[in-house]
Image (cartoon, rainbow, N blue to C red; front, side, top):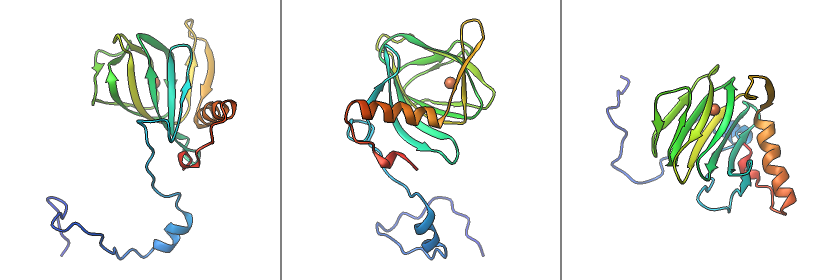
Length: 179
Ligand SMILES: [Fe+2]
C-alpha cells in the first residue's frame, strides 16, 4: 500500500542509494543542480544598472527564457513601468519595495508573486533602497512615461548585460550561471 507521508523521514543522516532507473540519462542530459554564492562577488559581480542600481546575475536558462538575479537599488528610486509576459517570483532581502499600482509594501523575507500580463512600476522609498532576489520568466516590455513601448528585455538581454560587463572588466565569465 502506498505511504502517505505526514513528514519526511529524518531518522538517519546518511546518503541513501535511491533506485532511480533514469540515472544514466539524467547524468548525460541534465544541466544539473548547483550552488551560486550571492553574498560575495566570487560567482558573479555587481553590474551597474543605471546610475543608482546594480544587478548580480545568478542564473540564465535559455531553454525556458528564465533568469534570476539580485536587483540592488542603492537608495530611493524607481524602475519604470513595465509589462511582464511571464512570471515573477521575488523576495525582498533588504530595505523595502512597493509598486505604485498595488497597496502593499514588501519587506525582508516577504514573497512577491506576479503573473503574466501584470504592468507595474517598482519604487523603493527606503533610505537605503533595497535588495531584491528575483526569478523571472519570459519577456518584460518597458514603456515610457507616455505609455509608448520602448524595448523588451529577456534572458538574452540579461546574458549580454552580464557578459559585456565581464569582458570590459576582465572578469571571467562563470559557466555555472548557465543552466
Ligand atoms: Fe516587474
